[in-house]
Length: 221
Image 1 (cartoon, rainbow, N blue to C red):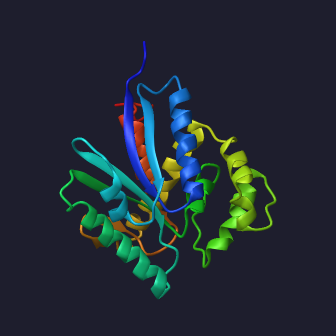
Image 2: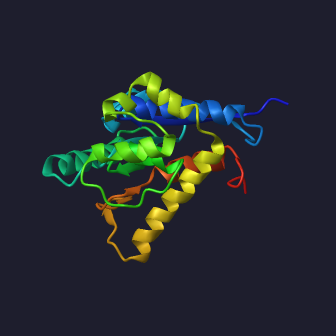
């Protein structure tokens, strides 16, 4: 019997996020554990409002925005805050759109590491994810640019399974629970919640939601 398909909409900042989501959809569709197939409508678009204006929808639609809180430098903080404002504005343009936050602090590379290993230490700069990436995937990239080249990045994706994704979700949950347990203040902008301290992320919640909707164990109840 053919499986029904669940459709998911995304706006993402860059190519690595785009490639990852395409891999994830393909992996879900190849999995006998998934009760539903997935169809990902994914666009590289930094501005959520532009994404919302350009999408054709019928009925209520959730869009996941995947982006980074790159540092606590004033320019990066302003950019992060502007993105949240644009997400909020996108919900008020007359379409039945709900925008969901999928942030990483400091970078999406944190999510990639969590598929293979823990990554709970504070980092000062984004390029410091290079050593954890190399260690997690048994690589020897000399720079972040080398790691993010399409062929290299997709070679890492080829190492992953949905079990690794489940591990990443669990590790991400553990990071966020660590902050709550330690009483670290969670910031809010409207309905959006986030931590200014790294590591922190909500991409795990985004992927968990997809797994739940596709009825993938153990999120199929």
